[in-house]
Length: 373
Image (cartoon, rainbow, N blue to C red):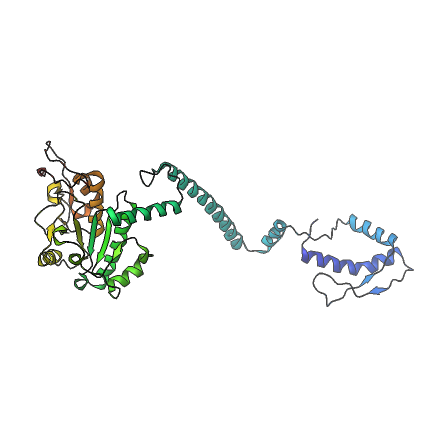
């Protein structure tokens, strides 16, 4: 029989009480000396009575205790201690403990399955870039390659500017949303096979937009892009600038690497019309719009809502997709959200228009006719 500490102490005290009786039965004429120096358990201040017995007496006492099936060993196994503690706990406590143990086991299995899922996903996904031989690159290697691509794009890639000089037309909330769009734009550029050279113009360190970019975007100061207080006109020749605005009359036919494309950094929840268009005209900059009317049609919806106003990161995703695929149909289908009320027009007849990929510098001969549904 295994006993815990408390039961062991009780039995030792009981043994001390019955030892004189047993000794009197075994050796009536023996008078043992009392020793009060022995202690039990942790109660060192409370001496107990023991007797010095000879070997024969101790043997006979041990035989009698064996007949009573009393084992004074202290069990130190944690599993048995837990069972003894469970006996003293309420049913509710035991139920909560079992539920907690089940949750621990379930979470452990879940983490194991999640690691396996991520491992399989990494094995199946293609290389982040075409020139990578194996998809099993470490995060550090991928990060180094990405930064090298972005630095190369600053020298040879197509240029795109974000005009940050429109903050006086926005509220604090709209400026915060613009900082988030800048983060998404940079993330898309990092993942691109052919990244752009990104320039944030008219952005001063004392401005609210700069402070929001620091607050909302971790590592903003380490982004591989240019941030300047100068305007686009001061940085690039005027004839190379094209301001992308939904209010422009001329549609963008292709992406010319010799041109510098400008996106108006504006989040307008109050629908102030033609702000970026009027600023471009006042500066003498050519304007263009995405060919949404030429390649997409309106889709009926319960609210009858149709809008061609896109966030700067959405416009940038469309430009990236066009540079990679050379197809406005594919680029607009991927970049324009369904909530804008437009869908890609399925061509019913073959068109003679030829679309060029980014880097050729050739313009589109003719835009396909808009399909009528």
